[in-house]
Image 1: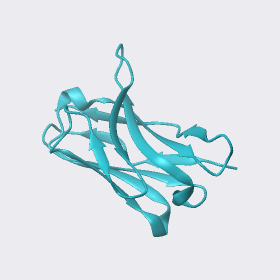
Image 2: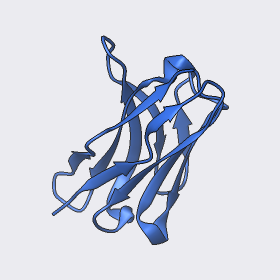
Image 3: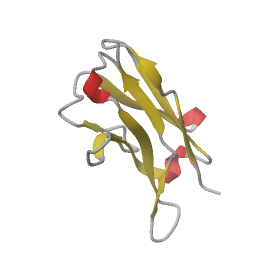
Image 4: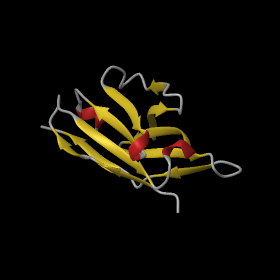
Length: 119
């Protein structure tokens, strides 16, 4: 069964850091691309960052220079390192992967993890 499981959310003060993890049930090479989204209360879901198998990354303007997406192929895990967090980063963060082992490719979501930035 294909699964993505996030972890690492929590409460952090403004200016702090958190690292989110998204663990895939199988080889992470079967997911391309992988992405982190977030959704704050009353707002639309926003694409935060993406990474493809070649390692190319893209970021939303709102997080450039503060967030870093990376992947550990040996651990079948994608990470989102979040630094210099702001209250406006508060949201439920979810990872998404396009599973290319099926025809046609299928999209899978993790369960989401809450990130709250507050003093």
